[in-house]
Image (tube, rainbow, N blue to C red):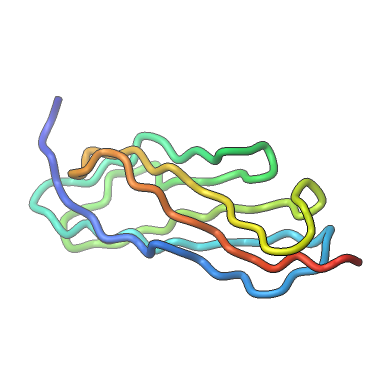
Length: 107
């Protein structure tokens, strides 16, 4: 279905230390490294504590866009936290998983 392209995206966002109750705002830069427009059809998180926004418009070859995810640390545990985002697109491979890491401290 449609033309396949390729993309580069940061594999991981390290938020460092956060106090429980703070929001983590993770930004992932996505670059279309192929010859066709990159269409990101879905960005989903593995839990309700994480909400992500994807670019609505196709990303032209050679151009970049940003995926922004927010993690509500009120809904995560304390200590080392790793949340995954699943990016579905017309790139090869069609599913890319990126991670958000943080050390959540008690407030």
